Amino acid sequence: MASMTLKKKPMTKDAFLKKWKEHSAQLALADSDPLRLKYHLQPPMGWLNDPNGLCQKDGVYHIYHQFVPFYPDLCSVFWGHVTTKDFIHYEYHEPVLYPDSKWDVNGPYSGSTFQKDGLMFVYYTGNVRRTDRADYDYITGGREQNTVLVTSRDGFHFTEKQLLMTNKNYPSDLSLHVRDPQVFCENDCYYMIQGARDLKAHGSAIVFESENLTDWIYKMRFETDTPFGYMWECPNYIKLDNRQFLIVCPQGIQSEGLNYANINQCGYFPLSCDFKGTDYKLGEFHQFDRGFDFYAPQVFQDESGRWILLGWMSTPDAEYDCEQTMEHGWVHAMTAPRELYVNREGALCQRPARELERMRKNGDSQPFQGSFQRSVSVCFELKVRLDNPTENFRLILRDSAVLRYQDGILALDMAECGAGRTVRGLETGAVHDLQILSDTSSLEIFVNGGAEVFTTRIFDSMERLQLEFASEHAEGTIEYYELTA
Ligand code: FRU
Image 1 (cartoon, rainbow, N blue to C red):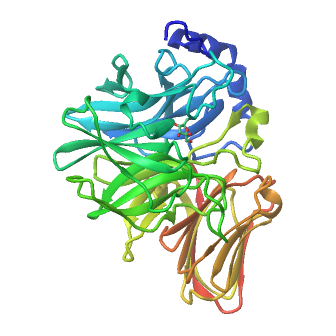
Image 2 (cartoon, helix red, strand yellow):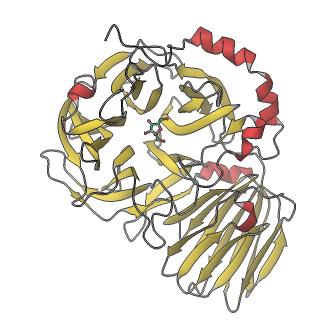
Image 3 (tube, rainbow, N blue to C red):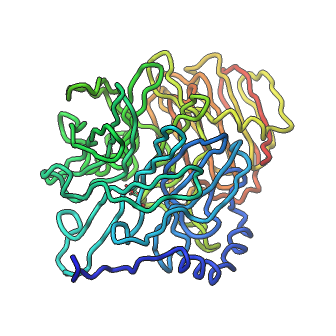
């Protein structure tokens, strides 16, 4: 260990602050970008990915996230920190985790917060990439994924990093890819779930058990009967209305008709597991989002008991352009905050957090028959209720971006404004309602109460701001609001 050479030197807070000053001109450059989102969380400069450690403490929501501020110059990863009380006003703070220890020198990777008696237990993956040999594949050699704990009473100040587990503590049939811990409590016992890739390149979510939140023992793993992707990233366990779900991001699934169209997927399995023994049942995987830009969501329960989800509004390794805004020194954003609920069919649904309604301005609601047209602002919310839900329709959303429903298939076609994004579709019985959030460079389309969602970045001129709905016989109501943050 002592002779090991690491690619990166640890980066302390002081070194970070110095670099930040050197790069400060980039802040104004980012701010001047017309594609800058108006009501979504985005990095002040550089790169942002997964939401991490989401929680609400004493009324304040803490949104930590993977943050690479000096991207693409210096790819050091930090835990960026943003707080909000209302999901409309956001305050940006200094990062809370730095790649400053030998356990996380290549980045404090994703993790989550568990609160007990006013104390935040923040678990994350310390990523290490060794460079002392040339032949590492970084799957079975050359990588460390350490489970690290820090605690905090206020979300701003954290204790020393404590190493809880290394790859040696994980089952021996796993590769070195084990990460993204989430901790929860069931039957008065604590459980930690982590995403994993085994030596046969099969993805799974592994579960550890603990009585004291620091000593963890491997208990079991969730996997499908037949292999489903080579790695499951960012697992989240959630129990809502007495139903259990396992959310995962499986990598390496081949597309199948309209399904699994992105390179990396994200969805949930209905789960049944009492965590007393090791029996469990996974139901059918359901894609969480049908659009182009959604990955690594994290869910948490706030102080009122609501389950809230934020996702990374991008996806790794896409064939289309996800770095359009890099000219202005920033890239990626978070989705709007979404509330989760279970519908009558037992599906885990997402809808925009109710706080966002406070951005509504100049709204109106009216019935329509056949078609409607209206001019809109760039930032808008549109709700459409369809009374005859199997009627074909076509809805031009922005410029050439169209949502089409034809013979049971709902498709989002980005045409010229997708920067390489083409078409994504979904076989759906009927479309009863749509709720659409538009921001300068994003669209989030919630279908049938959010049982299905399409999330995408959009890069149009923002000049042709005209909604056009066309059908032969569709009838219903449209509700429109301009949104101001
Ligand atoms: C998912 C992910 C996680 C990892 C993090 C690193 O996007 O790959 O598995 O912890 O990003 O930034």
